[in-house]
Image (cartoon, rainbow, N blue to C red; front, side, top):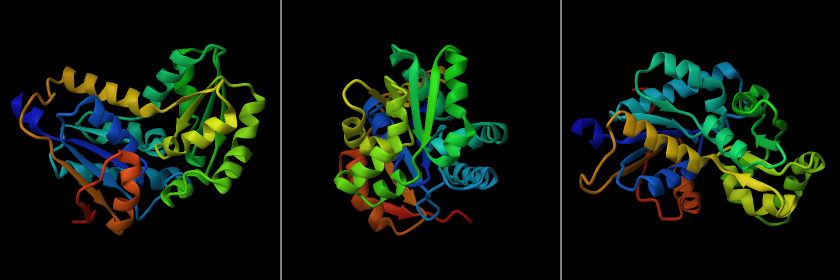
Amino acid sequence: MMAAARQAIGIFDSGIGGLTVVKAIVDELPRESIVYFGDTARVPYGTKSKSTIVKFSLENVEFLLRFGVKCIVIACNTSSSWALPTLRKYFKVPIIGVIRPGALAAVRQTRSKRIGVIGTTATIHSRAYESAIHRLDPTVKVFSQSCPLFVPLVEEGWLNGSLCRQVAEKYLEPLKRQRIDTLILGCTHYPLLSKTIQQVLGPGTVLVDSAQQTAAEVRGVLTGTDALRDGLGHPRHRFFVTDEPGHFTRIGHQFLGQVIGSVERANLHV
């Protein structure tokens, strides 16, 4: 199983946000190499139709498979919501989404059994979090809110300030009225807005970022397939985007907490 252990983990997202999942996986599994693909030319996914999201997701997986990855993480909540069953049907490689890990973390966290979910329009319409939560605990009440402006705010690097605060207050007011005690940040971009979101909701609401739980799930999958990398030299991380790499490099360090080395321009259609 040595050969599998040497292979990288593939991660894809609609843009920059999936780097929050990369960071959690690097923290959890520091020896693993990663190939990251951000579809920055076609971001955001959350406003697109199901068939388009599935088509993009299939292309993203095919791109990552060129690198012989041993498993694939869909860092994008929108793709996890709509494309995961199709991807698992078409590809043999283990594929991990972010919905179930996030739901699991929230169900463990809530005391009042009143959980809020924020996400893109497509993620909220899919009701994927609601289904995942109710499979774990049918008695939990789930309140959902789409926040379509959050992704462009993050992609622009506008992570705080009055504009950000106003948008957050507008979106989160209905959830405050429902007296939720736990909020799932149902998009990988949203953890970067967590300071503003926490200020609006107050200290009584716990924010759940599914990245850490997803990283734990990746560890479990790799352990189960005997594919954990164990002291085999230095890990190598590669980053690919479908648009101008400069913007990704500039904003990306805020997500990863470290400077990103080289970012390569991906060609999906080879």
